[in-house]
Image (cartoon, rainbow, N blue to C red; front, side):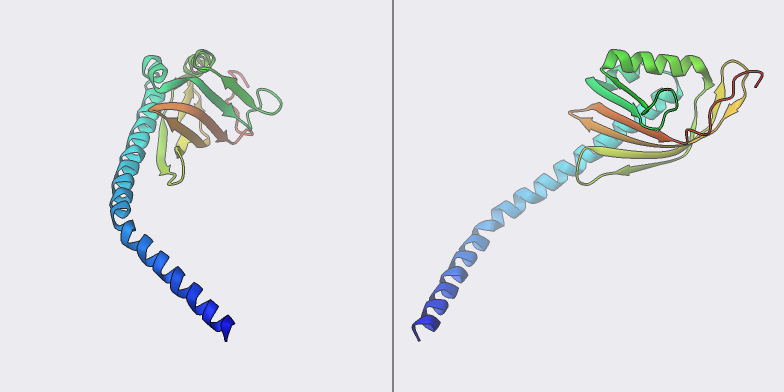
Length: 175
């Protein structure tokens, strides 16, 4: 009998604690709603920033790209055939040199069928697109599929991880 009384007392106590915390939870649910709208605004800002970044790449606007990149940005191309293990550059200055080289290599950089996917769990925007590029040397087309994972922190891009098919290489003139 004592065991039943003890279990009943514990159950009653837990019910009281839960009831009290639920009644005090009403104001925090308002905070959660405010937090959610702030989160949605941040998400929208990240998406707009990544769209601006893609447009700056297409227009070869190094000044805008420089404004969008954090000083400690990391740019990775894990499947790039340029070096074993892919390409990884760290820092805005090196990333700017990377983009300068791309801008010289291609006379046209255009992304088509672009899809932006916003992560709800972190600062990541995923971009899927097909490339419609032209080599500067001879205007031959270069088309590839791209997936980019882009992280934005405090209004700047901190990570660009670009995936593409490494078997589709730009053709050198005369090859």
